[in-house]
Length: 243
Image: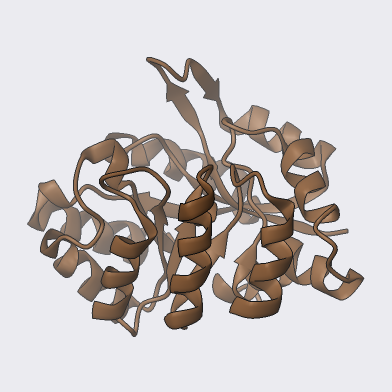
């Protein structure tokens, strides 16, 4: 079955994570597990050139996101326009937890306004207090209904946050869910059935999770064969303009 990984990284994550993967290694992993394309970002706003290099080397295998930090102000917006218009990047990656801002901060307004103008989605880390909780991401999505907001990890490892991610996505139809790192396979089916058949996507969060683990969560979720095709491929393809 064809797959698009809706969330992966290249680069080195030091400190507590002590993980790393480069573009060549990621391609090898993709080939082994029949992942046709990967929505890719680097480790932070300082390493977007790594994503650019991988995109240039492997072309259509990667769908690149520009990693932005709202504390950079106008420079972040300038970087966004440069990477989208000059280099063909297809979306934005935000991580409130890593960079210590609450997800609905007004600092993000210039970035979100630019995303709306450029008609590109915003991928945002979710699931860790106090910065990246589903309720705060929902307030951001509410403020920018014209921007498609992908709640990465759909609440992550906490049951209350997973439940909140589903509730917020049901309330706001511009919220999409990506399921890497979220341990409850049943919630994948619940998202497909109650949020929308087109708003839940497979992802790995490479190098943090192994494809076999993330694939099995989808396969054991209890969805139909057609739903598997949507979750593994069709939904990400539609969101990113591949089909």
